[in-house]
Length: 217
Image 1 (cartoon, rainbow, N blue to C red):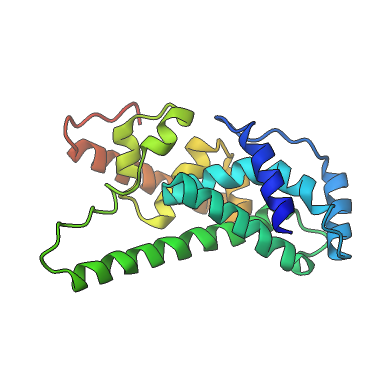
Image 2 (cartoon, helix red, strand yellow; image 1 turned 180 degrees about the vertical axis):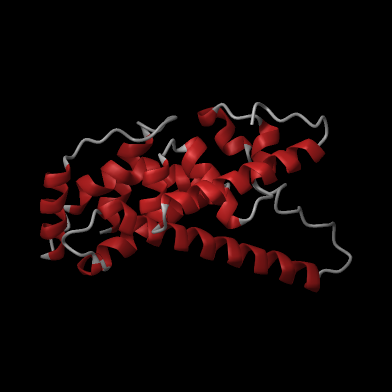
């Protein structure tokens, strides 16, 4: 299983770039592949990984802000998806179900990172100050592929998990409101409301940063 994920990840990395990953497997074929996976076929899972690895990686990168962590989290999410593929109902699409696994992996990683940072501060009182969350978000890791301003990414790193998530899905993975709603299992209106508040918060953060530019937000 690990070899399948590694090979698929390496193949996907060569194609990674801005925008949503191109669909190379039809929905009907995907249902067939999922059924084969449910029957124990590992080979059937590889084309599914190849189809969604790019989006998985960039979503994770937008949420956790680290190339290495995003790649590891993406692969771990696919591993969990394969192990639990029988929980995916036959009439449901793969990605919205998989996205819940991916986002849980990302937020678990962020919580652990926050706890480690807090423990370090408690254990080493006189050490140099740890970087604030927004400083460790590493916008440089994504700036090249998204052509985003560094100041915007620094501000995104200061958003709450919920607000950061919808900003990444909408503006950097180019998902529609309907697609985001399906992935988050909520209504389109809820997505629009969260996104409105996220944009407002992001503008406020950027306005308070040095220079106060809003970069067209």
